[in-house]
Image (cartoon, rainbow over all chains, first blue to last red; front, side, top):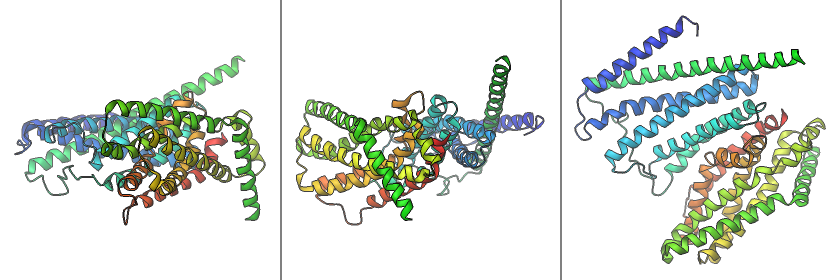
Length: 229
Length: 229
């Protein structure tokens, strides 16, 4: 991304998120059963899709780091991992807010999507912990290994929770079942998703730039020490 | 092929001798099993649960204790090789990372299986739950899950052993990925303890097999990278 592209994408993201807020709170009508709390859906689903995208970036960047040993790929996987962790937290919190209103409980252990997201959040958490507390010279390789393992095991986690005898499909499948009948619902949903994906890309890019700057500073400090010695 | 198998046999013997000399894994697994069983027994007795309730919570407690006990016990498994630069020597002598990884799985599976049997007995005593009728099948489930557990922990122990957090990092990074093994083992134990046999067409053995295959494939490809740098 060139320096001229950055303000453009930032501006587009802000405008899209602003329009999304306008649609969510001013345009879309109240949902008949859930009422105002249904509006959390636009943040929840958009953040979930962005979270999946971040996790996919972690996986691809980890594989490419292990095959090419290009430091840029490692920095990208760190950036996507941290942003994914924040987005996953947003998904869990907004889901719990909705769940408390719909099911009268904050969390349902028998719901596969909920538990899968909790496990995904734990994987992101462990990835971040390993990155911060691992042996500095080895965190890149070790983090990539965990990134690949975590991403590869998520489908199996979902399947295993779905196979539980007490498993229940309580999670609403609004989009799959054509639940968004009013045109304004679709408009708000589409803008929220695009806005959140752009925000995710922007945050990953900013974190990536910080990571590159940290890396350069570390290299320059090492060169200084060698020169002094 | 014969040369490969001979080298593999030598490595298994080396792992066995290392463990036999230090007895660290054995001691930690046994101590953790006793400690957790005493805590669980004391906790459950204070809750004054009836026989039916104990039957239902026995599998869950067995698997929670087993997972915690194993993931906290293997943190020092690679310590001697790392301190004595044993990995480097083996790699220089032409031994592949896959051979080293598979030999570690063999030893870990043996110790984890023994630990599972010991724990199943201890918890049946602590909770006063008779499992003698299904003990053979229970041991088979334990061996199957232990091999999946060993496949992942052999890889992640190499990742965690160089970190600053050492002891506590391994459970943090391994438990989220091990979720399918935990659910599979727990559900199969429930079927055995409650119904006396595995249900017809139970999907859980397949889940365990899939998890073990995934971890072994990942381990064979990634173990050498984890120890090389």
